Image (cartoon, rainbow over all chains, first blue to last red; front, side, top):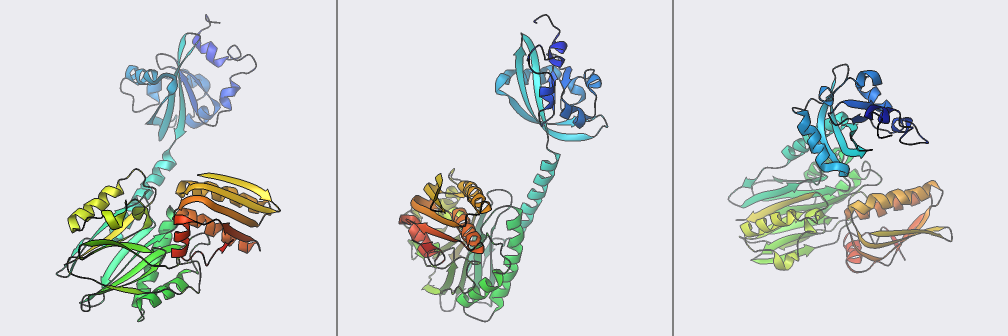
Length: 353
Length: 100
């Protein structure tokens, strides 16, 4: 058997597998190429022939460099695959079909020895759809980022933010707006779920919240109204965590109402604290009634309104949060890079001047 | 997180152990929904050994409860304690779910 030419060994694998023939390769769901030690194609399975458009006879005349546009030196290409041996080597490339169509692909390559003869096995995966989807997701991610408020400074307050989607698309959003010269309204929300459906819901939620703030009612009643409107279009399996706030710079009172985002971090008169209040998620109970709470704020105070993706990463925030703007912001940023991170991260950081 | 599914007296008993995060949510949801397809609409979820649950985990519980109610069934939770109990109280989910 060792004297059989490699080509025969491969194409007539009844010798290799007594009870099978090369149709076992044709059963694979992905295109498969087998190359000899020089990179010449020995065999293309059925899926590969359909993919590339070559017959088996045509394929046997081809070198891998005639398919793979990224090969500059074939010896180096094969050497890299050989180096990883049976463990396999995964890489991206662009292949050319018979009709000259170029296709981005992922290759899972292995180097094996069959009866002392070298064979390179390449499993091919067409990633053109994935690549397109990835580009779309990147675009959506960019659009989401551009919708967020920029850094803000005034004689009364400085506002920064933290925003880091877990994947491309986030269900988190935040915003703020002056009602007049001395009242600053704002919100932060987190839609349960990930992916495109969540991103679509986000836009609708934003619009509704803007409308809620236009209602001439107390803050908690705005949340009641928002919940009643939102419940009719939030998906059955979804809900929204929200925190709404209002800083009155004349009375120096912060008013807030919580609905699923039930805590925030504050440094009040240099003392860090976690403020927690109850409130059900938006979208679960049409008749939910929300509470509102107030606290005084002072010059130098810091407020961090954040989603749970960041809060759960903070080690004992009421004790460990630094009491200065720069140090506390840095501390949050450090927490954001924790390997324990599992969710979208967002925070509005407000520094009272 | 570990999840154990059993049928007892025509009720689906789900026992969860560990921390219930987003990566567990999809698996639990998929498995639990398959019981609905088989016509089982009553669930009891034991959370006594769950030490943490994030919003995705809560989302699964909410989804299953809505599904159970749509099918004229019920979803009960049992054994809330510690951080999980506090979370349910803070988010008022203790008013939404039947806790036994």
